[in-house]
Length: 80
Image (cartoon, rainbow, N blue to C red):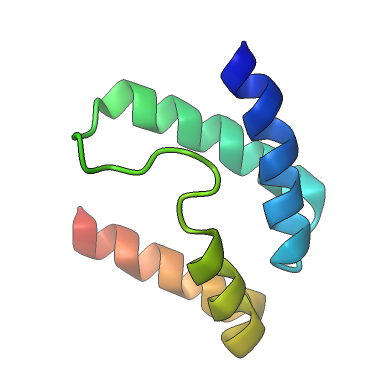
């Protein structure tokens, strides 16, 4: 419960800072949290909402939201 109290507002703030609506931040936090928990991960994994904030903000400012979405999809495919 403590993690949710911190993670949800932080996810909304990251979404706003990235140029999208706060609702997208909530969806991302919930879906990402479920996936990280379900897949187990590793000890090197960053599963928190602020894990890649600097990369997200830099990518969005340089390439826009479409470039950000493309980057996320391609990196996910490469990791998979």
